[in-house]
Image (cartoon, rainbow, N blue to C red; front, side):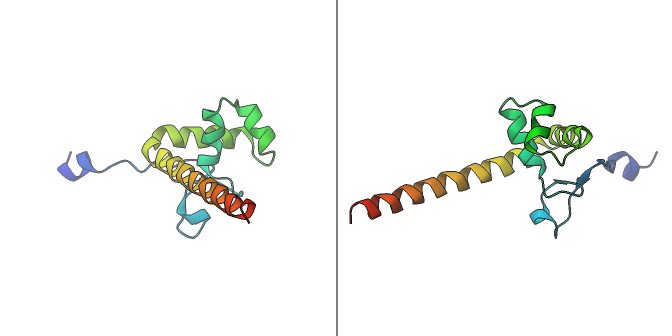
Length: 107
C-alpha cells in the first residue's frame, strides 16, 4: 500500500444530506427540503424523539431524521459550531429587542 493511500481520507456519502455552497448557506441540509441538519439536532438535544421531530417537520421522512443525526455524530464540531452561532444570534436579537422595547416604553 502506498503512503498516499494510507493517509487519504475515505470519501463518505451521506444519504439524504446535501451540502453545497449555494444551498442553505452551505450548511448540511436534508435533501429536497430547506431543513438543516442543525435544526434536527437542536430538537434532538431538546429531547425530541425521531417521531416527534417528524411532527415538527412533517415533510421529513424518518430516514431523513436519522440521516441528519448520523451526519451530526460524524461531524459534531461542525454542527455544534452552527448551533452556537445560531444561539449567539438569538441572544443578540433578544438583547436588541429588549433595548428597543425599553426605549419605546420610556417615551
